[in-house]
Image 1 (spheres, rainbow, N blue to C red):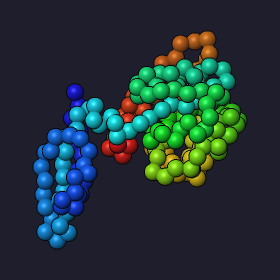
Image 2: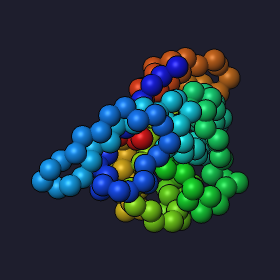
Image 3: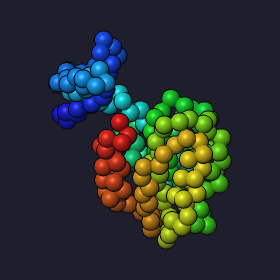
Amino acid sequence: MHIYVESYLEPLGSSSRPGGRLLRTHKCPKTNHTLIEVILTEQAHSKTMNACVLYFSRTGNTKRLAQAIADTAKAPIFDMTSTEPSAVENFDLLIIGTPVEGSRPAKETLAFIENMPKKEGKKAILFCTCRLWKGRTFKIMEKELDCKGYETILGVSKKGMKPDKEADFSEVLAEVKKALEKPQIQ
């Protein structure tokens, strides 16, 4: 089991801290605030991040990678072709996948992002599948997501996949897992 420590400032007398076991407190005499450090169990920690995987797939390659990422992240998975963009409102972290078409994300992926509601303080992880080169795929997606209030924290690609062949996703999954464990998305 992993143990996480969360630190934050709290005015004296306030009781709005999240669940967890108190580790220590320290009062700042100048600001009259208390630094609170709370030990969170993995279960309490996981509630701080609500992630989902969204993908568009033309040949099935991106779908296979999306499913592997969803399994690793223990997150629900949504096909963009059958999901309304407003469905992402309740998620703090979007893991978005697309095939690369002409050195760009698929037009269906861009249309989905353009129709998403604007939110501030949300995060995104991008992934793509490509035959040879990802081109400007992540730059284009990152720009669109930035306009919607999302900060992109990772972009990973898998190249050379063939729909009828088994693929090794271990490198991509390791990168995603590493990003999910960073404090920036908690």
